[in-house]
Image (tube, protein in one colour):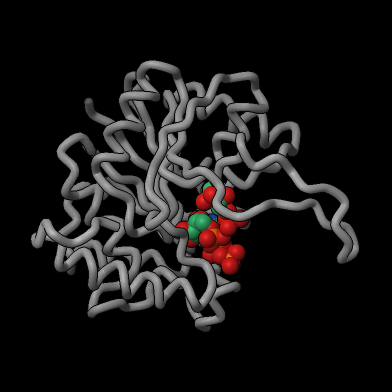
Length: 237
Ligand SMILES: Nc1ccn([C@@H]2O[C@H](COP(=O)(O)OP(=O)(O)OP(=O)(O)O)[C@@H](O)[C@H]2O)c(=O)n1
Ligand SMILES: C[C@](O)(CO)[C@H](O)COP(=O)(O)O
């Protein structure tokens, strides 16, 4: 079941405080964005990758694509101020008959192929789908440092990427959101807002978004562990 994918990588990485876009941070000699790109390069269901970059970083992204032989990147396009605009710019680059499109953060390098395939199947069946995990912490609504409410956790999920949609519906959603100034932190929110059904596929906690400095420690541990995964006696993460 083939799909195209948009990978937004045009952020600033402010919370990482690395003085550069976090996707250029090198872990075990490989830049973060290359880990993410490799997952899709190696997935036989993925037919093309649209990579979204900051204008000043297009050449640096191209160099990574070349060095790591990511042949499926058909275009590196320039993103916008917010993630939402970057994704919209990426989706606009896709032409041809309607198809399943995935959107996946450049900063989530540890997505597994099995999750991607379950997601694509779910989107084909239901229209839109996201990868998510059940929340592990107790969640409270806090106002001015005081708890106002403890939210029943039994139906709460942490939503990740990739998220999968039919391209024409996603484009229509983004167009409407731009016209009506609807702001969302993920693409599923836009589809929910236009009334689409979005289903959840359970993924892995290891599919973390590298956001703050301590996430790099976790990332190094996951890279180390996965390089040992051929030993089936070890727990998969
Ligand atoms: N204008 C933007 C903002 C974010 N992103 C991308 O969207 C993904 C998720 O965003 P996030 O983790 O918040 O990254 P940043 O926006 O870079 O981080 P920060 O908010 O800390 O600056 C990242 O791969 C990021 O590069 C993007 O393409 N365009
Ligand atoms: C899309 C996302 O990764 C889903 O969890 C998340 O919403 C991105 O949020 P951010 O505000 O760009 O960090």
